[in-house]
Every structure is written in structure tokens, then in C-alpha cells.
Amino acid sequence: MSVDVLLGLQWGDEGKGKIVDFLAPNYDFIARFQGGPNAGHTLEFDGIKHVLHQIPSGIFREDKYNIIGNGVVLDPVIFMKEVTQIHDKFDIQLKNILTISSRAQLISPVHRLLDRVLEENKGDKKIGSTLKGIGPTYQDKIGRHGLRVGDVLSESFHDKYKLQKSYHDYFLDGYYNEQFQNEETQFFDSIDFLKQFDILDTEYLINKNVEKNKKILAEGAQGTLLDIDFGSYPFVTSSNTTTAGACIGLGISPKKIGEVFGIFKAYCTRVGAGPFPTELFNEEGKQIGINGNEFGSTTGRPRRCGWLDIPALKYSVMLNGVTKLYMMKADVLSDFKEVKICVGYNYKGKEIDYFPSSIDSEDIEPIYKTFDGWTSSTNSCKDYDSLEENFKDYIRFIEDKTGVNIKLISLGPDREETIYIN
Image (cartoon, rainbow, N blue to C red; front, side, top):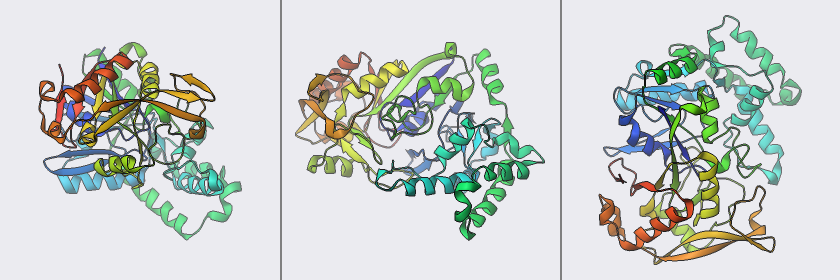
């Protein structure tokens, strides 16, 4: 089994980009399997920080091949900007190391406009969309009139675009303006740029290399609690963010899945609206946000912050079949006198220890266990044995409750600020 999966176990923003970059030397291929430019994978090395939105996080490692899978929705305008920035900043020729699935869906100007209009019409019931056109693109995919990346190679691509646009005329006719026309011009310019890349049926590329025992790392976006089926619906993303989504989003059999690396923060954050049982509205919550620089890498919005939630984490571990846990941003909690972990909820008059399918934050009260904190001297540790005992107690408790060992601890944004436990 040569396909390992790396994904987030919370509401996204767990630090997946850093870990993909950290693990990439062990793999031949890095493949994104879902999501779109609403993702923001931040990598930092050699004092340089960069945010990737659609391109797999393995591009900064030499001799690694990168794939944008069929489960991704691709904005060609953002793709062109992203490729250009990477070339100018790092002098990396992505055409040599990046292939795009012909089956991946295209985000068009219609989708971006539709996203804005739909969100505006929700009034105070907004879900907090990033307005990147993600949801409408997946809607068109399921509605069977989406545009796929492979369509850009067709001589009738413009006609296909006009047909797709016509499906939304009844709703958007009054919104087509000069700004939209400018976006259409940028869109077609970016299509010409996109055509310079390898556009293939990547399911064959991946499976042929699986047969050759090449190592493939499937990279997820967002997080399990934003999964369209299993997340805190309707405040979710529009794709399956779980291990099962990796099989669909890359065209591989479940039999090919090996390790599943589940990434979580030592606390919890959430961007946008939706239930968040352990959210903190006090100074502790503000301090976590300041320490962790908790602002969306795609939106810039401040993230809501709270304590670690064990019922939610166990739920994610179960759904994904996690084999190894990776704890991120443990340094953020350093120098707190006490830290807490939610071990259950008081929910509608009953005490429960699971994550319900439908919750409102006002209906649920977290039950906490309190731990003595650890100092910032932990942040400079290079191995597990050097960690303070209070921090080890925190780690052991999480392992005991989830039934999965924590094999990696991140103590800073740089790829070197990482403890790997054999």
C-alpha cells in the first residue's frame, strides 16, 4: 500500500502545509485531492514564508512530482497568479513538476459571482463563504453541467463556457456588469496559461506509479469538521475532506491506502460562522489568537479560538481511520498557567461524550479537564525526552482518549521546529 493520506481533523487551518513539506522527502508524488483556492497552506523555511492555495505543498522539495487531482476545483486566474509568484520568488519551474487532472472542475467568473450573490442574499444567516466560487462550482459538477480542466483543450471551449453561463442567467442577469466582463477577460487569459501545463487523466498516472511501488502522499484541504457530509452542516465546505474523499478525489482504491496522518492543533480554531462548543470569549481566547497569529491565510479574517475538543477529535479519528496523530502549534499554549481539554458536553440536559450531528453552540456546554501549563522553554526542544513533564501529561491524555499515538509535535512555523517521535 503506497498511498498515505494527510488531512486535518478540526475546522481546517491545522498546519497541513508545513507537514506536507516536512514529509515530502519521503515520497515520490504529492497529490491534492479536494478543495480549491479557499485553502491556504502556509509553509515557512529559511526565514521565508509562502502560502499555497491550489498547488500541492510538495513543490519546494527537489525531485518531487505534484498532482492536482480530479476532486479539486481549480480557479485558473488564481492558478496563474500563484504559479507566477512562485516562479518570481523561488525560481521554480512548475511546468516540470506539476500535472493537473483533466477531470478537475474549473471555477469560472459565473461561479464567483454566484457565490457573492447567494451569500449576500442570506443576510444574517451567512455561512462565512470565502467567496471564491467553490460551492457553486461543486453544484455545477453535481448538476452535470460543470466545466472540466480537460475542456480547455477543446476547440469548442468558449461555447461550453457560454452554455454553462446560460444555466445561471435567470438568477444573475441583473448582475452582469463591467467588473464581471473584466473577470471574464482575465479568465480566458488564464485559460491560455493553464494550457501550457500537463493536463492528463491523472488516475492512470497515480495507479501506474502505485503498481511500481512509488510512494504517494495525498494532501487534503480544510478539515474533517468541514466535510460536506460529516461536518457541522450547513457551516461546511462543499467537498469530502476525509480519507474516503482521497480515494474519490484521486481515483484510487481504498485498498491502496496505507497510513492516515491526522493533523490537529493543541487547541481549536474556526473561521467564519458555525457551532464551536469550546470557543473562548475571554482573555485566554484572545491570547491564543495573538500567540498563534490566528488570521485566515486566505481571507485574513481573525479565527475564533478555544480549547482542544476531545469528542470532536475522536469523531474525526474514527471517520478517517487515523493511524498517527500530529500535534501542531503546541508552542502557542506555552506560558499559560493552566490549559484545558474538553472531555464531553452537557447537551440538552444530558451529559454526552460524542460529537452530535446537529448542534448550536448555545445548546451545548463543554465539560473540561484542567492541566498545569508548561513554559516557553519547551519551544526550543529538539526531542521528546526534553519536553516538560506537564506537556507530556497533556500529550499522554490525548493519546489515551483517542487511542492513537502522537508521532509529531510542531513547536513553531519553520520546518526545523518539529519533533518527530519514532
